[in-house]
Image (cartoon, rainbow, N blue to C red):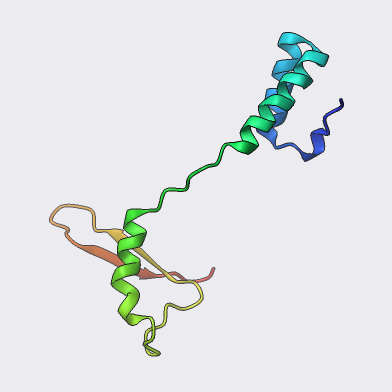
Length: 96
């Protein structure tokens, strides 16, 4: 059973080549196909970002406000840093 390496990700190709070097071509393809089946059946659970959820909750009342616009490039929000700095810095992203 030949495995099409063009449809594999870079990490999968590395794993397949490592298996080929360690156990041989025929056995490596069997082991790799079993590993791929196990990987496809394992579901990844995406964790929600708590900060993003809080920002979404804060901005929810402004959803229907036509005067509130974020623009095409959006904004960057970061913490103020340095001696005596407190709060957040909000900057408009500009293209360029």
